[in-house]
Amino acid sequence: MPATVIAERVGWTGSISWFRERVRAIRPEYLPADPVDRLEHPPGRAIQ
Image 1: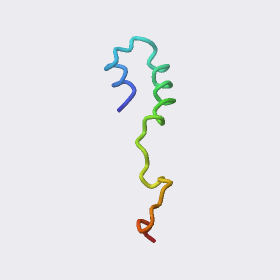
Image 2: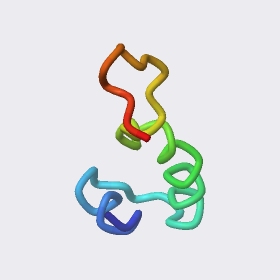
Image 3: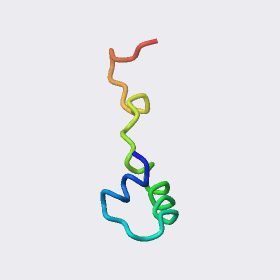
């Protein structure tokens, strides 16, 4: 979702460039976990 849409939804009235920078900075924290990056590999579940 673009930062401008988020700004409209939360009622942001300040600088849009500042808001975009903040959204860009925190966006990686809210990404879903990548299923390939799991650290546990139970026996019988490894595929080669």
